[in-house]
Image (tube, rainbow, N blue to C red):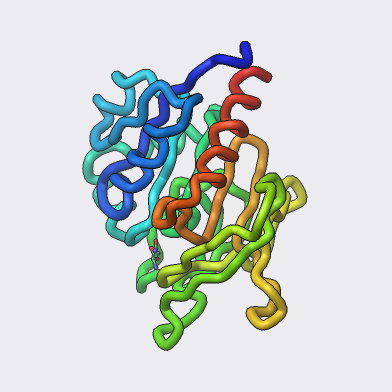
Length: 210
Ligand code: GLN
């Protein structure tokens, strides 16, 4: 794939912060378009190269995805090795196992070999921002916004940890990479810093050319 190749990115748009992702992605030079994905028809018809699963409420996203018939498409997409990034609720959905789920559990897309704990910071500190050093993001620390965020409790052997909180928050894992998958416990789309979106696009381009 040549240097000037552009990609089309879909953003799962069932609930949560999908508009914000679309706005950031549309401004990036290597993105030909960023489109909302709401139905199996849109998923199949829009010819996307990569997918973002946004933050929001993972239980609602999973429920709507299942009812609309999208869940199986999403699982097949991830299984087939397509570049995918999950933010916050999206990270929960991509995980193979989630703890602190609602009674009866919740449906996941899976594929990312991690155990995720939902709402890991409790009700008192349910949102905060922290400067993060992220592998692959050059320059000053990234202003990461956490909202009722999950953390990654453990990772499988193929998972690379790319960011952790500092010692005051027990160096908890908040960003990982596994082959074609990226996941962040925080919300880069809610800041004006587009470096993580650029990282995803580079990651997707590298995967699509390999
Ligand atoms: N707590 C939410 C969930 O479990 C995630 C929060 C978020 O995406 N900002 O789905």
